[in-house]
Length: 179
Image (cartoon, rainbow, N blue to C red; front, side):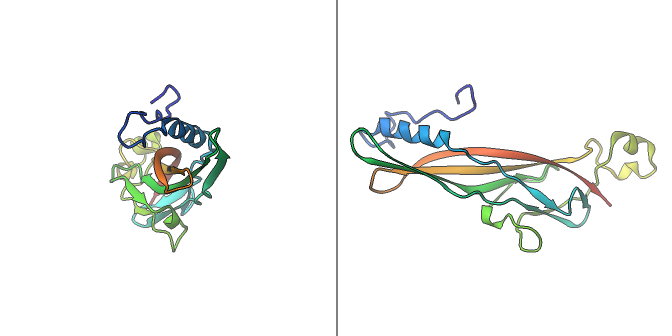
C-alpha cells in the first residue's frame, strides 16, 4: 500500500501480466484510481432506532458502473471499467461479517441484508442508573455498522477483458436498538 492507502500497481514482472503490457497495466491502474468511486450511502429500516428481536434491513443504492476509453500513444484503444461487485456488512455486534450481492441491498420487504439484534444499546448513565440498564449492551451506546463497497476493475486492449483488481469504499452507520 502507498501512503494514501491505495494499492500498488501490479509488479510488471508478474507472470499474470502479459509480456510487453506492463505500462498498459500501470495506465489502467492510474485510470481506475482516478475514478470517483462512490462509498455506500446506507439507510436502515426501522430508522434511527431498531427494535431488538426484530430484523433491521439495510439498503444502499448500487452506483452505476464507470467506464473510461482512450487511445494509447501506440494507437491501441484502452478501455477500463469498474463496478461494485460485492457489499460487505459488519453489523457491529460481533456477529460474522457478511458479503451480499449489491443488488440485494434493498429496503424491506425485498432486501436481503437484514440482521436481528438481541441486546439494546444505551447511554452509559442509563446502563448504570436505570433499573433496566442491565438489559443493555455492556459497553456500546450504538452498534457501529460498517458497509463496504468493493469496486472491481478490468481492462482490455480490443481483446478479452483482463481483471485489474479492486478498491474498497466504506461508510459507518451508528444505530441504537431499543426494546
